[in-house]
Image 1 (tube, helix red, strand yellow):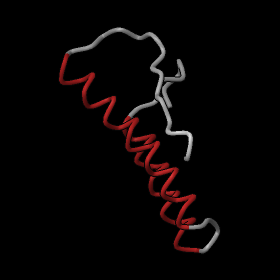
Image 2 (image 1 turned 60 degrees about the horizontal axis):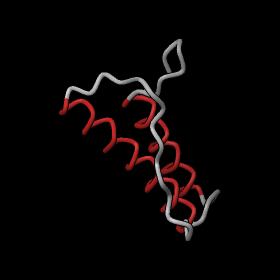
Image 3 (image 1 turned 90 degrees about the horizontal axis):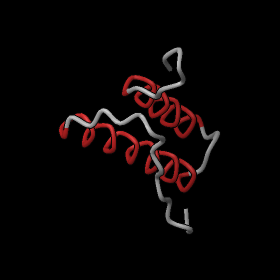
Image 4 (image 1 turned 60 degrees about the vertical axis):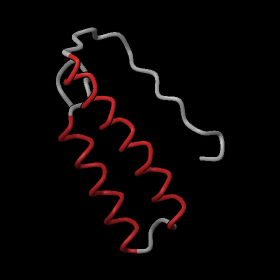
Length: 69
């Protein structure tokens, strides 16, 4: 993460790889890996949309998570 605690694409990529490694080693279940990757992929999509629209607003982004996750 950057100095001012912004999450960047490379941070999410690193976390996705970490989830994959934990799942492959058996440290987490398929369901847990699915939940974590769903959240991380939502964050990636948000960053992508913001960059395409030229969004410069630095207000906190709220990601709504399905209650079953």
